[in-house]
Amino acid sequence: MPHSAIAVFTSKTLETLLAHGGSGPWVGAEQRVHQQEFLVCVRKERPGAESHGGAFLVGKISAVRKHGFDRRGQQRWFFEISEFAIPALSGRWEWRNPVRYTTLEELGIELKKLKFKPAPPATQTIPTPDAISSVKPLTIAEAKAGLAAKFGVSPDAIDIHIKG
Image 1 (cartoon, rainbow, N blue to C red):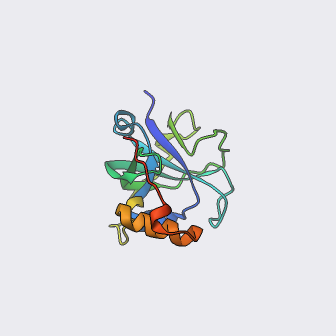
Image 2: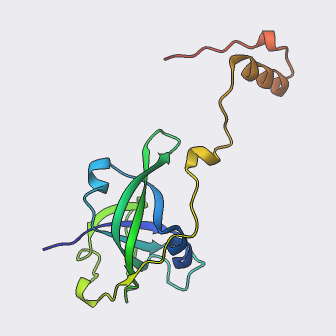
């Protein structure tokens, strides 16, 4: 029977992922993210010793939690892991998107060959994207004042229309 997995293309190191207790935030469909058994992290660029496009962590997903929204308003998710293994695999990432619903078998990962270890307790948290956003809510008066300063006009020369 295939083992469901979500594969993510990440530049984070193994140490960072373990310090966070998993990986995220990733955009995904709510029903699909909750159906996955395993998290497979695939190397994007360096700094890890793994080759670009190679799987370097397989984690048993213990929880999936909401983790803010992206710029388009899509829900982001964080995948917590309870155990992890380092696969002996140097495959290639062949997909366009940074998130792929797949199986361990499709990725060429044999579950019985993995040696899982308990994941250490998370020591770091990652802020939600909305918590680190540089765009803060403004009043109409504040928006007019800012735009007036930018364009060198009076705030009275600024009209703001909100379409709902």
